[in-house]
Image (cartoon, rainbow, N blue to C red; front, top):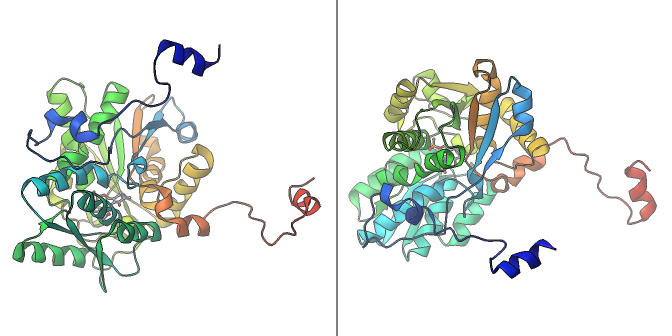
Length: 367
Ligand code: F0G
């Protein structure tokens, strides 16, 4: 009997189970109360995808999974933090929020703030935000301020503005952001039944690595897992302050999302490294692009360049992964955010300007 008909007969709905968003799903783990107005786009519940090609490259029975957080409503993990930050801002009576951003935070802040009926101001480094992200911030109705300076400068400015004026800062110095983002670790353990042996993650301002570590620890304390992962943070070689041990004045990388020289969560990140027996490492732009293309063309997963740093880093350190280990690579953002990089960096055969005739099409196909 066809599947659809048999499901109908059973009276069940075949396709969709309602997911209420991460605040409802993980309410008891989060600092919300019955009176918190929940602003949600039903973020979270992103897939943990087995990465066959990456696993095969490493061999030795190592199992690699991709936590594809690019499938959140605005296309990045920032939605996890923003549902919390905006809900708490609304609860506190705030009418406007502000952030500095390399793009994703601004898109998420804009979407959630507007949904919550608030104004959103976003400061971005002029010329260094991928096109999709800028399009989102504008379309969601943020007030976008592009400055002649990098992300680190923009963050310093919004911190001063939020100190002086009645506006809520929603960068990851806002503690509610990390509270929301820790739910990604919960989902990983919920899916695997245990923590992975390694968690590979791109690091910019170092909020997400701190949030994941908090999540794994809370789940362990509650008995949901027995182990904790080694936290492996990867930075772009031109923007690697945590690897170098000092601020980078002029950060540079093709992965504009993590083009950050002075991470605001530096102390947290250093603590995560020592507590988890983890490490930070730099990956070059060439290594990032190689992993980005591998994910697209062999796994069928389109992430943005910064996200591919997690896989680039894993491949670089793969000789250290124990046999039969489970590894999760966090893919923080969707590839559609940055179409320019994909169009410039791919190995596709792209035949253009062809006559609109069957013969000429067949000929380039090799027939
Ligand atoms: N991956 C992506 C796609 C990001 O957008 C960011 C940060 C990171 C990784 C790094 O995360 O800062 O928590 O270590 N993007 C910020 C932004 C800075 O403004 O969107 P982190």
